Image 1 (tube, rainbow, N blue to C red):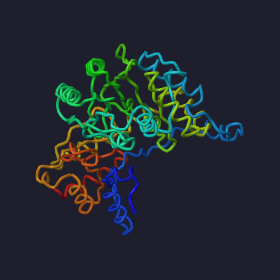
Image 2 (cartoon, rainbow, N blue to C red):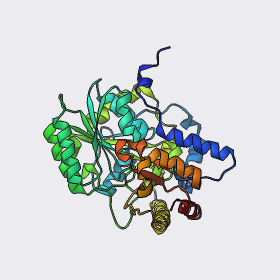
Image 3 (cartoon, rainbow, N blue to C red):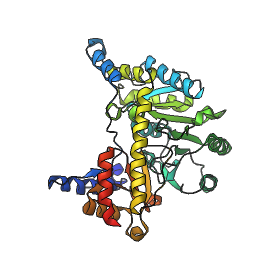
Image 4 (spheres, rainbow, N blue to C red):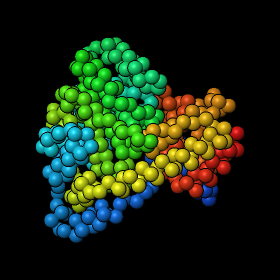
Length: 389
């Protein structure tokens, strides 16, 4: 029987290979220290949970909601941008709530592209940035992002010039998953100038805006004057507020793109369960001490992991942002490639990491650690990894 067209366009998910090996090890009773999936392990703050519980008890909240998100939630997101970046957003035309950022990205690409439209995506990248375009029957042009920012911009411009008709959009993500790369506002100014010159839309994933260290502040592309003419930004409550399973995200910015997403979502869903939306308002409008505590926890875990890796002979830099560490494969194992290296590490040391190849060909010389194990477990992992050296 012939395979379905869209399924045929999707390759096997690389991470499943590691996940299956991890599952087999656990079935055998082995204790695996798991840095594989970026699934926050910290609890959702109590004041958010308590609001959810009270909202669930109100039967008025049990009905269908609205696909774009209730007004007070969209207004809370607009207020968040105003407080943090001084950016004014119209909750009616420039903000849409989504069922997590992946849903927002996927349906936005579906709404804005026709078959054959070209989306430019960095390599490596978070998989949905690439595969949302594949699923929508768009074409993807990958641009190597490792190295100097100006070189990356030059590669993007060459890619734009090398495609006709011109690409529809450029996908970006800073602070970056998986590479942990960061940029300043000057970079976004250059990106906006380039996009304006070549009539490109920009989609910027700002998922890790709050997970920043040593005084770094992650810029919003919407800070750049005129950026709303061609850009949208995606934010999620998953990381900042430890709400990954709640599935709360936002797409904000350019009214045309937001409107297209609102239109297609109106056919696809009825939005999030309303008590989740109400609790999310409390998260966005409430005290940010819980976010600061989360950042503090990730910074401590980062330091324990990176200091430990360097101590055992695995040179690794401390990231300025995100909940990840992006580590080059040690020189003595470099020829293995990231998938075989990750499987070997799992088998020999009982430590699970993500192979860089799962994020694109440009990631094959690296592995990603997600900072989702506590400091004690991280030290246990370092003791295991020491066997490699």
